[in-house]
Length: 380
Ligand SMILES: Nc1ncnc2c1ncn2[C@@H]1O[C@H](COP(=O)(O)OP(=O)(O)O)[C@@H](O)[C@H]1O
Ligand SMILES: [Mg+2]
Image 1 (cartoon, rainbow, N blue to C red):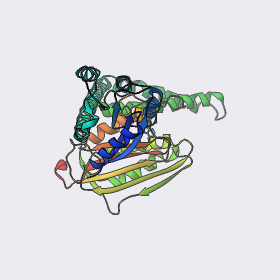
Image 2: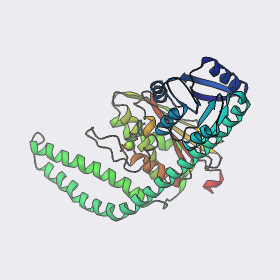
Image 3: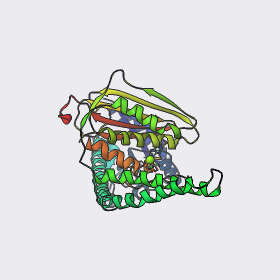
Image 4: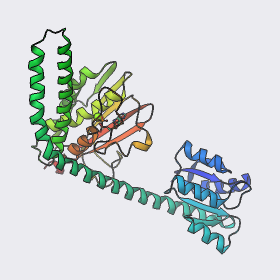
């Protein structure tokens, strides 16, 4: 089996690096590789792309293994780091391990390198999984808290909003259309409308877990979501690529419509300069193959991809976008509430499903929604 490995090598000797590379290729690794021998070059390499592992020499003319290690720990504390050295003294090894090296391999005994890397990659995966689960737990707790607070305030907000909106409509009707007061009333009405949309999201969080389920067709939900958002789609071409027939799932149509509309709205927001919005539905039988995390059981799924050619999501915030109230939309006339994705995720998860974001900054984003198909156990 060939394993892809993005290897950053800190090594001054070309010859030694060739030996290492040969050992790794023989060990079954397909390498994306860069060799650096100064701190500046290492910084640059770390900026440029993601790496799976760093292998570093111990003594170099312009740099040292311990300095490289310090730099790596500062920048990417979880990235496995293995020191490889000509010879090794006890003190050297202790210093290195204290500083956080994961292993120490002697150049004369390179046969140890491949198993060491293998083990490091596996452990790194476990660390990543644990971090992701911790982050998910934290997010779930935040969402629950937001729901609780929403339960207290959302009804009051609604009660206050109804007269604001209503009186603004009445006032507006008392002025001629071209009057400045009419414009002011329209602004009040537009703001009240935005407020009531935020409120509706909050109420969804407050009412979690109380869905009235009925069989429904995901294809129909997608069409309705597009209809709802179509007024905001300036310069955007929409392709509906829906699987022939229907995709019957069980759930609340109103809620799923909200979830899908939120994804569509995000796609539209991301394409302020116009673009292509594709809505693709299909069946899938194996959640694992589709990149689902292990805790979602493989089953028959209905899948919806909401694909945009917008700005994309930078890698460093992709973990944050599902957090309630997280939004990067601050400059527009429409300020983001930061509730769109968290509410969509909450709804979909109440339906036994999952949302996954795949994004390439500058190129676009795919929001992939998985929902259990109706003839499978989660639907009953
Ligand atoms: N399709 C997308 N393309 C680019 N960025 C997105 C997309 N979907 C979500 N985002 C990012 O995720 C953030 C959170 O989204 P969301 O929860 O819907 O809140 P809001 O839309 O109110 O900002 C957005 O502010 C944006 O930065
Ligand atoms: Mg949104």
